Length: 484
Ligand SMILES: Cc1cc2nc3c(=O)[nH]c(=O)nc-3n(C[C@H](O)[C@H](O)[C@H](O)COP(=O)(O)OP(=O)(O)OC[C@H]3O[C@@H](n4cnc5c(N)ncnc54)[C@H](O)[C@@H]3O)c2cc1C
Image (cartoon, rainbow, N blue to C red; front, side, top):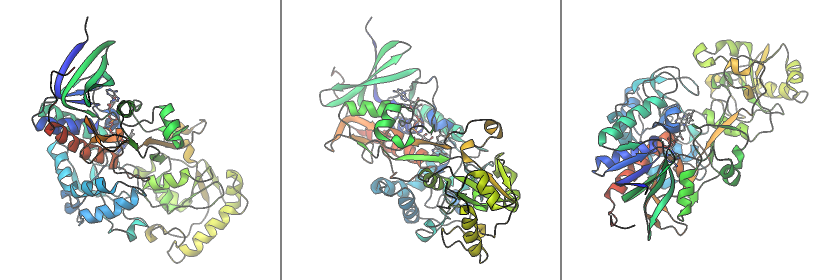
């Protein structure tokens, strides 16, 4: 029996946020669109995410919360926070289009409440529509006017499912067709252009011909140990921030037809240290020394900790521990307690006198309300006094996960590099020319990021450039439909 053949204007491979955005725009522009998804349902890592969206420039939520912002101010912050080596061309467009992009999310049925969660956390437990993502911490306070830009759907805690529910329904309402349990395995090449994909569906071969083009939105490659070893070995041996299907298949398919890749070693890293505790105490490395202002966006202290001699410890005094609001404590309990710093040093295996010296220096300046060494904001700076407690970030957040368990590394992450694309999602070859009929977006591509990461920029750039790719492929000239 010959394999089934389907024909559409546009074939989108992968139904996460980038695929949904590309399909919605392409279908809305009048193209016939099919979304291929290897899982039994849409969502991908996007649906399992926190749902934080990095948006600004003066969105309705920012204005309702009393913040003035501009595209230039947003660009100033992000080019520093996502750098060095952020993609400034993509970033400029992203910032200039951010208010419109926020309205697009609303048009997909996603609601945002006009209220700010004004406390350091990885993830607010409330439905507040806005949160800080490091804009109010040094050195960024010296680079841009501090304005919160973490936009969150009206959902308590992890909200990726809310974002995806809206995007899935928007893509379907625009007219896109979805084929699940369908894993794309190779690109079909017609002469000098990509003309479709080959796929497997329950053990059968299926061919999808694409009259206008294929959009690869298959996610990153953190679940592919070989690709990690080749391109981003820093993440080997650490936890994976993914749905388990980020195997880089779209990147590999692109490379098989001569696509270039970029920023393959760039990674997001998250450390299971509690922001609410760190701001009230300090984060020290395995030599008992501070190395970062603890009020930064958690991804920044995570990156900093990643490169320290470990293990690192979260240190806090009794007053600081008791001041953490229950909602921001995430059930974290100290594993070590001591009356004096020498006792705590001995308990943690820190060099004699190291922690005492670190706390001594911190307290000397804290008496004047400052932290001139790392510039933690004065609102968090006070003299620390015993008794003392220490939390081991390697043991994670949930109390049940910690008891009697062997510690992991405490770090987990995902990849930020991928196919080299234009701002309209055209995949570029090794010689820098667009590969005809091939587009990509999301974590299958290199987006706005350089070596830095801020929450909300992955769902953010995946959807923003997914939309641009969807429009571009829908408007591209169709290939001769009879080509084989
Ligand atoms: C726990 C967690 C929290 C996070 N929190 C945030 C956050 O708050 N904000 C933020 O911006 N980012 C966050 N992220 C990161 C973000 O979710 C991802 O980087 C982003 O969702 C990637 O989107 P994507 O569309 O590129 O890929 P995905 O959403 O992963 O979608 C790719 C899809 O392609 C499918 N696929 C893969 N290969 C094939 C194939 N060969 N054929 C057919 N289908 C295929 C996959 O099954 C998947 O459904 C988080 C991630 C996780 C896991």
